[in-house]
Image 1 (cartoon, one colour):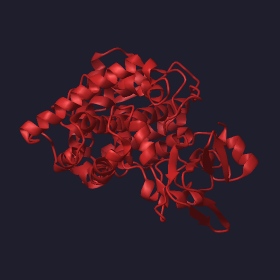
Image 2 (tube, helix red, strand yellow; image 1 turned 135 degrees about the horizontal axis):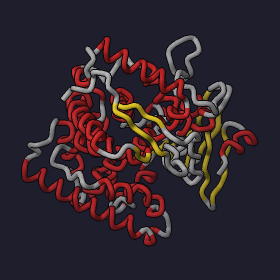
Image 3 (cartoon, helix red, strand yellow; image 1 turned 120 degrees about the horizontal axis):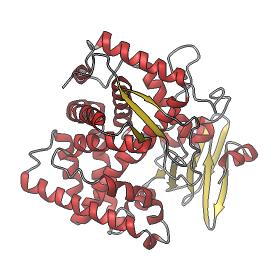
Image 4 (tube, helix red, strand yellow; image 1 turned 180 degrees about the horizontal axis):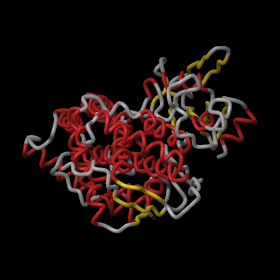
Length: 429
């Protein structure tokens, strides 16, 4: 569906039908913020969550998920993914393992596909930081298969995704073993209390151990899926813009030298999540703006009126509300020259662009936004500080029109070439 075409034709809000299901589309910034705030508590995501957790292996009925999933497990993520918990429990293990993965690249081939580079360096460190050092790390191949199969698993022909079903079942077995081991060990090897609290929340209620494992698999999948896509596009845009690449390398090198004494390891000593790299922050926001898709879908649980200024209309119980955030992100009146990647678009100043709506807002804001931003930031800093990166290809891949997640899939891949820098900052352990 070309929502941009319909926005130009019908305006910033309109209703259409798919069979007997009505869907209300919002593409006005103030209306979207009213939707995300959900002050009337009329918009729910339970059926949307069920469409994800079902293919991930949950077998119980939707009403049986109410207390364990929406009453305990999902609310526990607010604390687990908070800035304070990330800084206390996840930052150090993620930093250390990420540094090791980047150092190991020098013993490997000179060139990679960009997706291989992202997967090799990011998957293991984030998994260890989140689930602890005892979690099975030979799961990346099955994660990839599941990720590419999930849309089919959500549809009426799910039985055709045989490789995805097998990969999902293998991952579920690993999470079942993980839960049982935590029960036996009392979670002794978990780095912090927050994950232990989340594990206890998923074990509360009447969910079977397989359904508990499916909840953790959903968390595991959501940690990686859009993060890997975002990292891919961030580097792809930077490689196409040599000036942006040079400016980012300069900021990273200067900040590490002046603020951190020339040591990547000193970044671990920060009590907050990596301040002092404003151009890197802008690069992250801009790449996500460019490839973020409209993915906010909520069910209307009772009739309600949405009002913003002079705009007002009623949405009916049983309708779905779709937040068309991409229409705003590609609007030249909001982001001038919106089709062009500008690495400094979000730098502070008189012409600073408004924040994107990629993470949502209010009640429906993305719970994992702080972890995603921190992981992308540290990953890019280490990549550009430790390696010179280039690509023999001059064109960006197209965005796959079949993409269904919050970040677009690329059509194809990019070859990247790495050469180890010799700048005196590489001797950290």
